[in-house]
Image 1 (cartoon, protein in one colour):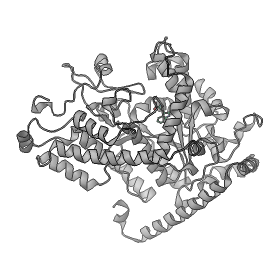
Image 2 (cartoon, protein in one colour; image 1 turned 180 degrees about the vertical axis):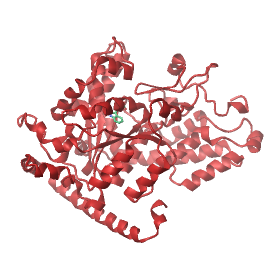
Image 3 (cartoon, protein in one colour; image 1 turned 135 degrees about the vertical axis):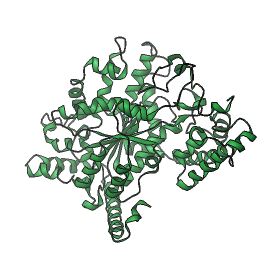
Length: 521
Ligand code: TRP
């Protein structure tokens, strides 16, 4: 950093980005890079520009107000701080939840290596809090197939050592344990790897969806060409149909009808599942998939409501806001397996600073927290709005130095990562299998509507019954299944969910009597 002008102009993140030098910024599932200007500097990713380019509306105060009105809880800090910043039809999900009591959450992860980094945890932490807040079922897709196909494609068709199908399955399992260590509730969370789970109804939906996407459309969205392996071209349909509750009948108490119980009539019985909307919390790079999805939801045999999205920014690379943390560049990222000393060294050595060249300059002119990586990380992980505000003010005024900002960041990240590692040690294979076993999920949904949504989504499952569809039969069969499948813990979880819902209801009732301002505090 040579002059004071350099504040806000981060250096190149890595060679790939340098080589590509995009004239405009690139954001898709396979490329993320800020725009490169004429003198070769990478600019910060411009999220407002993305919102304009792809007509993805920004979240506004109106959404926050509506969120607080529907949930009775303050809006999430990542939303308040605009780190979760844009959406598609988020308001529709809130409307549906208010009226029908539930929806499905869906997110995922491509397991490209055995260890996750700090940036990977952000959408999961956000998703976890949404799940707790709304008390709804969540599916997490581990795309070992995508990563296998992508890696092989990247290596010109060669299957290198350590990148066979089973290697990616292992990465999936390791990553699932990492995700569990973030604290998800097994009663209402289903985590699966594509290599283990995709089949049955999921695959029926996949075939139908594939028939709605042409080669040209897939190439347009992801940059595929004639040399891309056909597995990768087809993969996108799986990431899309993963958003349909009807891809997972067992989660709602219907049998999956895989052999020996195969029943070609089964699909028609699951009509009610097609009416449940889904919300996908994800980072903005995944949006191209879901653009394709939303255009086709209503064209399925069982039309599905257009999937809603809530989109987050990337956790910037240590080098600055022109790129995201990358697992393949160890100096760009803090890994969830890093030791306290590694965290300290990485932040001290590599974190781009918004501070001034000299102590004297800094005291005089102050620093810029907006481009300061240590401050940026704190804005994701620090709970207290007041402390965050205080840090920014002191930094701007020059009262606080870069070293002090870094020290605050280091202690916060060491605590977060250390706590994670303790929990991760306790996640056994058995615990992992509790999440990956297809089973009926137990969730309460909107407490104002009785808080027992997993017994049937009001207005949906009931409609099926009223129509005399084979719903009764399906639930009898699912009961049979439950007998052999840990119903004890499920019942316990159901009781807990019920109690929790009761409490929430009481709280809400009390709040209703109190002052208006309380919910927003
Ligand atoms: N393709 C994503 C990745 O590489 C994984 C993924 C699958 C995903 N389904 C998703 C991410 C839904 C977010 C939401 O990480």
